[in-house]
Amino acid sequence: MFEQFTNSIKATLYDRVSSPLSSSFLVSWCLWNYKILIVLFSSMEPYQKYNAIDIFISTSLFSTPFYEPLGYLMSNGFVYPLLSALAYIFIYPIPSKYIYKYHIKQLSLLKQARNTIEELEVLTVDESLKIKKFALGQERGFIETIKIKDDEIAEKNKEIERINSRLIDKDIKINELTGQVGSLTESVSKHVDEITRFHDEVANLILENNNMKDELLALTDKLHRWEGLYSDSSSSDKSENESHKLWDKFNSVTETEVFKSIVNIAKSETSDVISKFGIYEKLGAIGLNRVSIDDAMNKLASKELISIYSGSNVGLSADGLDLAVRLKLA
Image 1: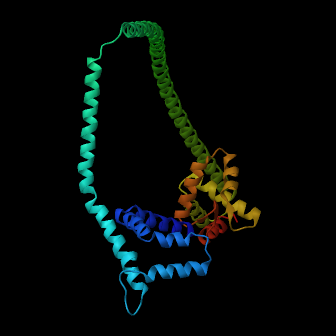
Image 2: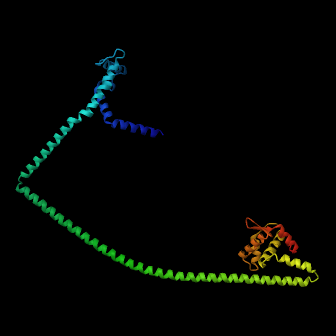
Image 3: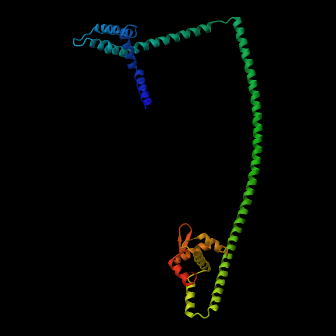
């Protein structure tokens, strides 16, 4: 902050001092008050300096009855320096311009006279020989320089030819590599198409495998149901119909297996909330993938048989728990 303040003061003072009026007024003031400056910078005692300055101020041409120094301060301190500065700024340039023109004109005339004398001056034999020798030396030097430069240019041209031949070779190699890259790109694109086709075939096979597993599980479930029917032949027709209706709530074997797994894991862990990863692991052992398991969970959740929580957790809802009890799963 202080540095910025001092810099601004310096800039302001420089602008004031560089002004023609300020500099002219300062020089004029020093000239009109040179006696005071001599006294100030002398080796006199301070009280002697004060007395001498008072004497200078009291001897002014203008005097005022109420304050004697005011006349000196108004004349030598301000009016005379200001008039001198204005005269230097406005009056001095007028004769200075004509004097400068006259000076330049005289210099031009002197130069013309010197050129005329030099043109009329006759050279001696020795001077002519010296000039000829100097000219011959300069000519030989120029010839040698030109020869050296020609050799350098020839060498540079050879180097340029070598570089051009290298560039041509590089262009040929680049074209060959570009062709190879094109061939490789075409080959890669063909392989990519084949890989994509293989992926599609594998996906179709996986889908067919999952469908076959669902059909196998459905057949297995039906077989278990028929075995249950033969083993419980003593049960009433009403209870059999009710059991069939309860099992019919599941649209696929995957939904049935997912529901059974949730009930069994909840029973073994004695917890209402279980992790999906345990279901994935248990059902993955019988060939079900995560996509089909998640789809079955979403369908069970839409039927309000299970609840899906954040953090990959699920649990039986109230209706799901009631259905598990009625199916004798819980």
